[in-house]
Image 1 (cartoon, rainbow, N blue to C red):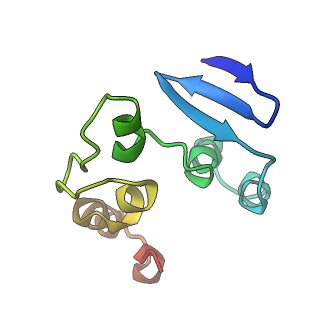
Image 2 (tube, rainbow, N blue to C red; image 1 turned 30 degrees about the vertical axis):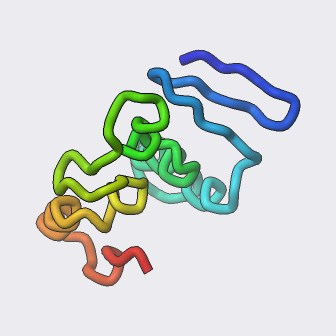
Image 3 (tube, rainbow, N blue to C red; image 1 turned 90 degrees about the vertical axis):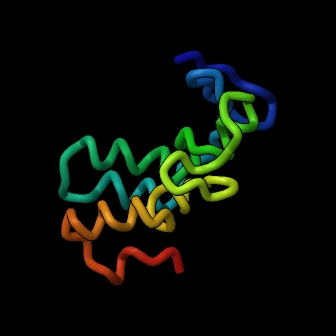
Length: 105
């Protein structure tokens, strides 16, 4: 991973994708206090920063068409990848997640 900085913000470069970073949001402060394993907190960081390598980000770098690889949805974003994709929803339901938590609204 290579880190670079600009006058307006910090930028991280990971696998050919640039993601802008801003000061930690309330979400991150909430995540670091969760009584859970570090892997879950670490996954929350890129989710909260919209920094997952989803189709829309990969398309911007020329690595993908941007479509969801599971269901073929037009332009996959983080919200689609995590809870709007029918295949993701099925996996989350089978894992026992509460149905009320599985809606993007």
